[in-house]
Length: 316
Image (cartoon, rainbow, N blue to C red):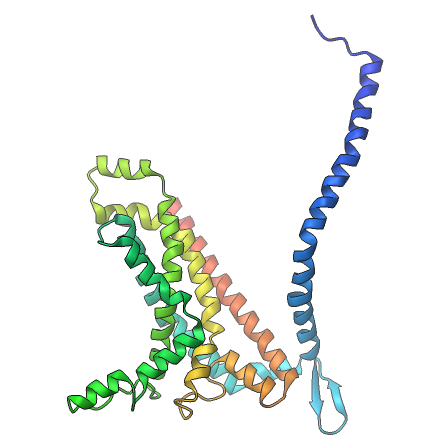
């Protein structure tokens, strides 16, 4: 028999909906209450400082007249500042050389661990990751000791065999010495991200590859690496951001090589010295915003190029 829709039943449906509305409002209120602490902290410690820094960047402290509104003059000054531009160029070189080496090592270690060809896998995985757990300040101090031209182990070994000490802290070697520190610190972090992506690959793909007669190298090249491209892109974007924000390592090595690492060696170090040494808060805020825009542009270009490459490969 078919159900007969009576007027009483039609009227009962809206009543049921009206009864459920207070429950839905209660659920929404609970959800808003739960996210309120995060929103409050986010606004207080991120949005508010950004807004205040943007406000500061529009002014300039003058000897005559005090604080004056200058609009975008601080930004135009930053775009023509040789100290800032040289720091950005140095970090661009750092990005081009260090990031591929670091991510290549991370991918290699992740593939070896996933393939199970290494002995003591847990010990090796922990050993590669441990440098990331070391605070950046401690790592920079430790490597500064190792690089030392008078007291470092490399200098002592070179002195023992009658050879000159390696100039790790010279002008020609300094950027590469910092690259080595950053690579040592973050290979393990990126390896864990890539390794987690490898462990998420369906086993059916490996079974199909073995049926087709693919070896370990072919499987890694044709299945594993394409499958972890999103993880590689994520680590690449993180590395772009970290490269342009480099601060701890040059700041600590500056005391060992003050003639090599100046106050403008990196954009972040330059903004720090402008703010806390020169007390030019307004221009430092503008430098920070311009650096943020540079990071956004480079990250967007990297992501866009990766998407275009993926589309071309799908079209084939």
